[in-house]
Structures are given as structure tokens and as C-alpha cells.
Length: 386
Image (cartoon, rainbow, N blue to C red; front, side, top):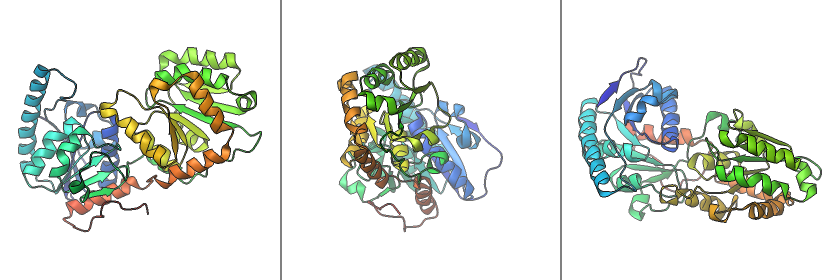
């Protein structure tokens, strides 16, 4: 186990954050760390070896690294080795928590959180987990019966047992402050003859399938719609030249890049978004209130992106096209139906906004602070948006 001790720690009560792995787990922890730090809490990060790479607020925290390993989708030998690593991590975390005695321990899912959260539960420390998706992840399914509070990003979360739901609270999933800042931006008007702004994004690395299908789909749209389109598409770097050429050949106005550094502005201006259905994307779409065509990543663990997309579709804020069904013709047909009916898009935007949680960071911090302070007055499951 390795330690990293940083200067500037607050003298307030200590709260330990257990996270690691992908950005979907790390970002909520980062947002919570920033908010709790501003409130005067002393923060401790417990993670696996990847924690040494964290930047932002997490990179400034007192950090302790323990052993951990994933067990899903591996052969027997690899699973046994992973179980050994998790067991070692458990004893490392137990000794660490006994020594530091935090007022609360908050986990964010993923296998790196398991040893710490199990140890905290066995030590009778106050505990909570945060679930980013509409389907409770495998780590959080294991931990849910053992913790004091369960923070949910979706009001309805699959695989959450009825007896555990009694300790759940709907906090939402934190978004970047820049996204929260445009949460109140009204849905842009789309009168006849005005530009139609379409935002296509596949997440931080872009989705290859959208780079392959979107240009042809847009080129096949009726001429009246095609001339009004203003496209912004994020693609993989290796696709950049091909996608730019495809739009140019089709005579479409398109801004194609590997990365957009002004995503909040583009999202607020968009009439329609085409995207994956990862936890952060869903939080941003609902925070700002923008309708979307969602193409879930089919290889996500337990197909949780399909569960995410289904929740927003059920609430009339989006339309889903499974990747196996995604062709240029299918996408073009759906786009034509939507882009020629601005009233439908506006209604879906309002539906998405109704389930958004712009104050997710504050609500999650309120829950963590109440837990650390020993309060029993935390909100109940099914809490509505303020």
C-alpha cells in the first residue's frame, strides 16, 4: 500500500472517498471532493494504483493506494488471482481505516471501491455508495445491503432490492460546473428556414460507429432539411479526415473535431443530440434538457447503457437505436421524422429537463455531510427535484 500526503488538508471531520477505474466512477468523486472541501471537510482518497494518475481536485487529496482487481469476464485462474488481490486490498483498507477513523466512507462503484467499502462496513463506520447508472453495478449490488445510504443518479434503478431502496436517495449524477451553468438555457427556437443545430458525440474518445454512419445518414435527408443543418461532430482522431471529406462531398456544413473544448455552449445550442448513453452523457443531457437519439455502447458491463437509454426514452426525452440496428438508412429515417417536427423535439427537451438534476453535486454533498455529522435527517428514497 502506498500513500500520498498533500498539503492544505482541512481540519474538519474526515471523509474517505473510495473510487478508481473509469471516468464514470471518478468524476462524481471528484465533484463531491470539491464541494466537501469547500465546506471544510478533510478528504481522504482510497483507490487502486490508477489513483496516481488523477488530476483535478482528486489529485490534491491525501491518497492511499490499495490492491484491487476486477473479476468479471475472466477465466478461473484470473478470477482466483483477482480474488486474492481484493482480499489483500481488504486487509490494507481495514488497517488504514482503523488508523484514520473517518467520520464517513463514500464509495463510487467499480471493483477498486469494494475492499474499502467492505472494510468500512465491518468496522461499523458510516457508509454510502453512489450509483451512476440506471442499473446497479455489480460492485454496488454487493455493497448495497451493507451500507447506510445509497445515492442514485436515476429515480428508478434496476437491480436495487426493495429492502435496500428504503435507504436510497435520488441525488442525481454530478455534472461539470460549466454544464450546470447552462442548465437554464431555454431550448432554441427552430422556426421554418432557421438553422437546425445537430450535435453528434460519442463520449471522450468519439464513437466509431457514429463516424461511419452519420455523414451518409445526413446526406440522405430531404434537401430542405439538409440545407438548414449545422452539424458539430466529435470523432476519433483516425476518422477525422474521412468524416470531414464525407461531409464536404455531401455539401453539408459540419464542424468535425476530435475534441470540443466548448461542449457546454454546443449542448445548449443543440436542437438534437446523437450520442452514446454513458452515465455522464445522460446527466448532461437531462441537466440541460436536450432531446437525443441514443446509441448505447453494446459491450458495456451488464449492458448498462441500454438501461440508461431506456430510462430517458420511457420518460419521453429520447429515442434509442441499438447499435446492431444502426445503419445510415435507419438513422436518416429517424432524423427526418424528428427534424421535420420541431414541436416533437421541443416536447422531448422539456421531458429530459424534468428528470435532470442540476444540483446533483450539492445534493450528494448534503447526503455525505449528514452522514459524516451523524444526522438521521437525510432525505428518503424517491425525493423529487427541488
